[in-house]
Image (cartoon, rainbow, N blue to C red; front, top):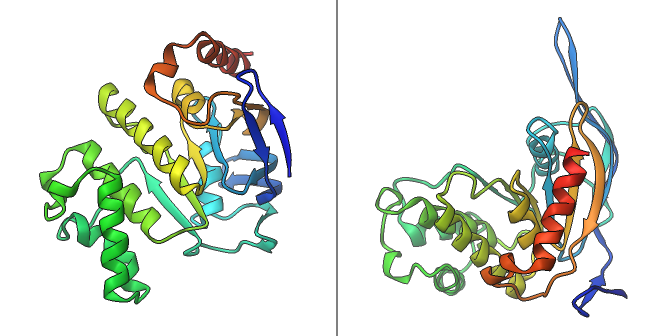
Length: 265
């Protein structure tokens, strides 16, 4: 296992590839025209990596994630996860969207336990996992609350916990904090980073927020639109453990500026 030392003197370890996109193309065709949403996407996502994807609206970010999640078909190419080619959705990939997608008739702990019950896990194991994630997301006092009784940030915490509780090999997140107010969004970013630092799932995180991508990711993939292509991939050499004060650091501000310049180049 190799390592790269960044400007903070910290090591960014390079693990083996978890996911490989190989010449992935997506074309939407109608009787009148065709739109190339993704063009020749070649991308490796490393095991346990937090990878963020940014780019202008319409660059194919969400299409990329939906294809990986099995919710959309590619026109050509292949995606390999752990040496097996992916076809359709699977329990090995958890998904979190901007909409919370919680079951309104289930309370917090029941929502988190839903997938575990479907998988027929033992009751003792379900309770152990649910308790663990309720504590991780800080909603111990709301475990019996229904979604309608929760704020937007709380609902998204439950959605994240529900996905992680099923131990997916990959967590796919499509602008999950896009609908939140700035203060709640910042707290959710911090929570997500803290969960990743402990749990170390492989995460593909789609966002249009440059600051969010730089704060969360180990690498940032920058896409261009018309057609959607990978413009550049940059490593983020920042401390492994990150707090919100990092956003005021000159190095962090410099990284944001670099990403912004690449997007608008």
